Image (cartoon, rainbow, N blue to C red):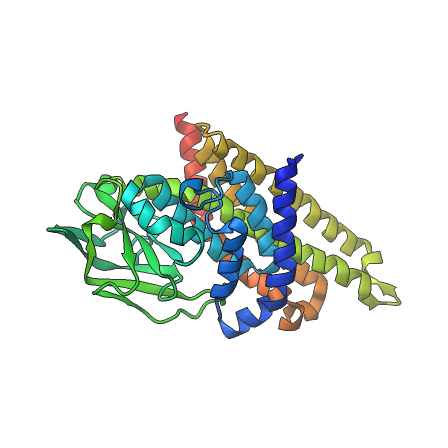
Length: 377
């Protein structure tokens, strides 16, 4: 793909920030389980807090392909921080795209600057892949809504300032779901413990509880009953973002494996001289190039709002995240025993990329989406 002059400048800017501001701290953030709010705000200062959010309230109004290019570069520095920023972008876009004028004016300017950090709350303890079966309820009470229920696996639980919550306002299946903004500190809002995770350790992940949680009725995003549509629309772009983070993390792992293979000597030669290692490196490069092409094409189709966008976003998410994890794991193998040590940082990339095959819709659900579209189109 030939990038425009503007895209080249954006990529260079994201790459420089990734190398200078994220990569040097990624190991420490992982070890200390620290999500750095200053780093998130610094990325927002570059325009990355609302990449595809409109300019009216401070967004950059870029395309989904531009976002993919940015997250690919940022994740080379720290997969965990880049992935969290991608979730914040998805939530910010949902508020800006579907919210009323007053709601947008209240929240979007602070979201695009990362003065406010947002989390996305769809998954529940009993509603994962079957998201439309969610039980969290929102009952109108005068000028307020009262929320009851719980959301699970929420990135930024307790850390974030606002939570974009899908809750049931009627029993009409997916058509009974609405979207709300719940501000941290709202009465009845509480959080579970920070989950102990395989990867994404820099990100806090927690259950978000709503116990007679009262919020202003004005915090509803759009009309009642439209929330599930909003959630799915957000996920088209979210799946591209998380795929881009897999691509960037895997590219970093490949680059580390290339450098290591040239330095590591066995049997009197650099291991890069052995055909077995050469073939592995070649396959890793080929697979990443194929993944990159599919991802860029899907992002371009979403930018054009073509009817096959959802299918291609699901296709890219499935292929790129599977490929990214495989390439990172192969990079660990090239490092041998040293790859298993935290000092070489490849094991962190492997751990961080594994969850990308699960979140934003499992890769099994991505196959369901693709098959359903093929069989009904």
